[in-house]
Image: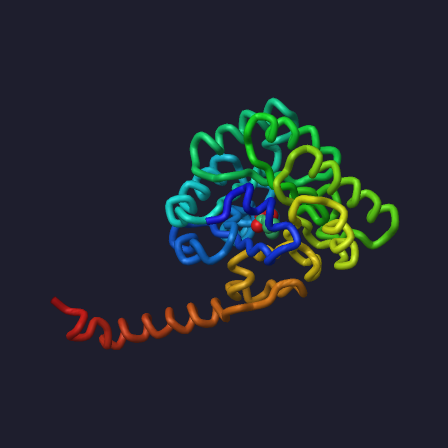
Amino acid sequence: MQTISSIKKSKSKTPIVMMTAYDALFASLFDTKVDIILVGDSLNMSFNAKADTLSATLEIMIYHTKAVCQGAKDTLIVCDMPFGTYTNKKMALKNASKIYRETNAHAVKIEGGSERAHIIKTLTSNSIAVMGHIGLMPQFVRRDGGYKIRGKDEKDIKQLMLDAKAIEEAGAFCLVIEGVKAEVAKEITKSINIPTIGIGSGVNTDGQVLVWSDAFGFFKEFKPKFVKKYLNGAELVEAAVERYCDEVKTKKFPAQEHTY
Ligand code: KIV
């Protein structure tokens, strides 16, 4: 099983595999296969059909993280701190401590660059492991007016490099780089000593993360360029549901072998 320290040491080695999970059932299927399970606040969109992640609460994240910890006992688990739960040092420490106390998550994840480094420092100096998250940050979507690819001009590239450095210096063990031009993600990865995990940021990061329901094709309408579909989940489930309905209506199910 990976630990915070083994992940830190995997910089520039075999790529780190991270996948989201939100419940015990799927977490148990990913357990020991992926290196890290992220209980992402993306669950607010993928499992709660909300337009963005902003209305996920601490209680919701704790509920799902408990379930994931129950299903995946041998995988490193990271819980996303939801929007508005780490706006100052005191609040961040209180809420991250609550996550540590009430779940078995090994770390929390925080979105933000240099402006959030003091928050990360507070948590790491109080023995809470933190994964950073820079680039396209879904919790900033309303402020930024949409999901925008980062690293397109010199000013933004400079800012991203500063953000990555500040997060490393604040003691984060790992850094998610989302929606950043591949060349820029590569430069950021080279410039820091903690591993980077990319999503929509090209192949030259120290690992990759995908939202599981995107990777397994459960959303027919949502097809961003960075997602590879490893399964036609929606089609398989729909076909199975139709077969079940049909067999109940035509009395093919239950058959003799399903009957006591
Ligand atoms: O919430 C989430 O699932 C995430 C990943 C996309 C990195 O933050």
